[in-house]
Image (cartoon, rainbow, N blue to C red; front, side, top):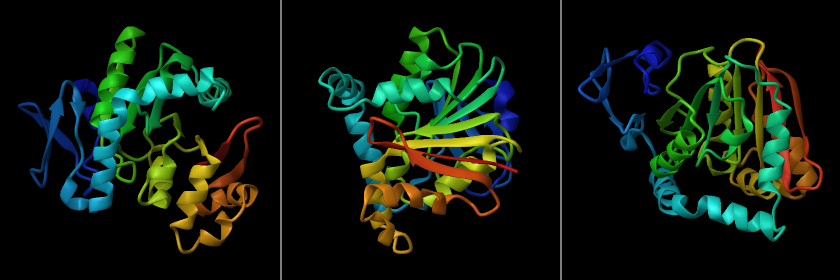
Length: 256
């Protein structure tokens, strides 16, 4: 990570600023240490998370090596249209040169190929193994990336930091989807539109696990229509819909 970006960071569990000491991010008040491995800060405290969340992190680490190959294979056999959906949607985001951009649930960095080259890019993911692959993909494209490992419901960034915040294919795996969406809103600047894409089938499984929303998971379109329920009430211009010729939905809203 670049030292000049240190003022943009905070301990996501208590909100304190960080300092850097001997390869660690250190909370200035608590002294809590988070290691920086190969330039990637690991800002994840397993003791603050459930066994389920820790297991999910382990599973994504184990499957990281095969992720890109599986998606590519599915595209070739026309089993899915994930990369096509990603490319078309990202090009619609109107990201400009010099913008500071956050992608949560970045995975292996599949979307990097569709983003402008000269942006200030930050990526966040639960899986360090996914991030290592994203780092390699960024190097192949001669990109400078700021990558962080942690839980999407605890983003290690200060309020109103980013010009663009988006996610493609991660929300269904969150233990607390509402908090994950709220964190994306918190870290976005005022006037920013936050974008989320994911599989409709994944959204149905996600809502079924949430007692207050389970009744909306009985039909695909009803699930898509219910996704705005996860957005904080203070947000505006909230929209959701199905993406044509795909199994994906979009959810977008503007931060006042």
